[in-house]
Length: 87
Image (cartoon, rainbow, N blue to C red; front, side, top):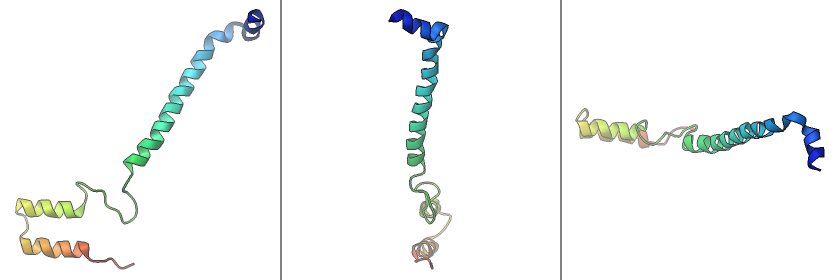
């Protein structure tokens, strides 16, 4: 039986693992990419702001903390951000 199997593959048996290794690597990166993209883009979309440095409320609070704007201007701008948006 071993001879029949060896006769079937001939000298190509050496290349079998080299065909499976790229397959498993590709599969790993495809699965990783699916979860990585889902995690990376979480919170993005129409009408959504990314929490952190790009959030206008955070930028406004930082400007207030640095003294670039006074309390009245801070409250006015915050009320504009909190106002309901027309559909």
